[in-house]
Length: 470
Ligand SMILES: [Zn+2]
Image (cartoon, rainbow, N blue to C red):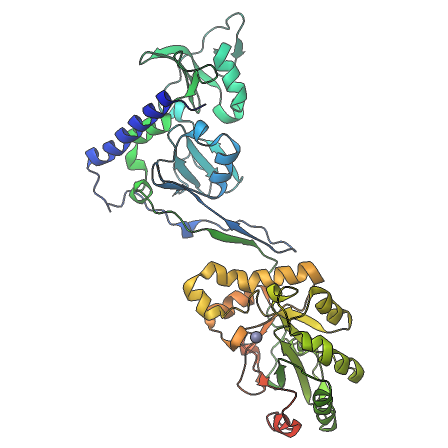
């Protein structure tokens, strides 16, 4: 529907809008009204399923503003720039209180042809009633023959305006007509609660009815209602990752004092013999094997712990683990825990496939998360928080999607963790393992369980020495 005439007009009006801002000499930085993105409620309902998604805001270099979130969805679904024009502000938060808003306030963004409003209570985006706000409602008139009459406001609608009205979404989008066809600035126009339709006879057929630039006009008249930071030209927003997450794991069922639970971690298992000998030596030393998931249940006060417990874990999803560790564990009747790198499975030579880790799970082992790409999450948090969150949460989502419910355990790649990483892990996992530090485990370190490094080639006595009471 674009034509040069219209574009020129748009540019002119836009330039005059920006010119208005400058001409008004609004003191930049003066606190007209502040709105922080952090004020926004997080409204994702907890779900049994994980859904991670990337939200990519759209940036308009034409006016140097972003369109984002629910408003972007509405913008896309209802005609984009043709229907709304370019954004004139960033979205901003309007707190409750002036009567027009819902009880919790609303998100607002101005476009050339509309003001879009998002109500967090109803999750509905709609055009704001700029026609009403601009005072364009005229007294009711009698129905005219051949036109559609709206008794609600007492106005008629017909011809090309009616056709356009229907195509543009009707009452839901534009509201009721609040005037008859009138002449304004040399154009025949008709006002609606949320819009102004204009007749441009010189335009090509199909483009003769236009939505008026009433967002621009209203904004120009009410700049002081808009926070200055929303008016300022903006940089493109970074893509956001958003998540639907399951309920957080519960806190420990009851206090449990710190326990000596040695957790060994292996990598490659080049052959079966040495691992078998280690396991037999551990058994002779009176050790009782249990999976990490069981040990975590005990630490959380949900289950009892056997005497002289010992946990075996296998990191990094090496193919040698299914080839050599799995048969030994099977023969010795041991349940172990495998921390896998989801993006390596089936894609990198030397690593297991999804079928192989599924087979481990069917043998009774636990298959748990070691991130998507073996990311050092502490390092990644500094560079790209969204990517770090994806490594931590999405790996579990993918594991459970492919293999069904897990124990929700996490192992930090390289054992690297800090409080920020642990907090993200704790949002969805029941426990997490790091490396080093011996074998004393406690509820205060559920998200930094200590582990002892093991290789099948290590003498069993050496490993036993690192286990308290061995
Ligand atoms: Zn690793």
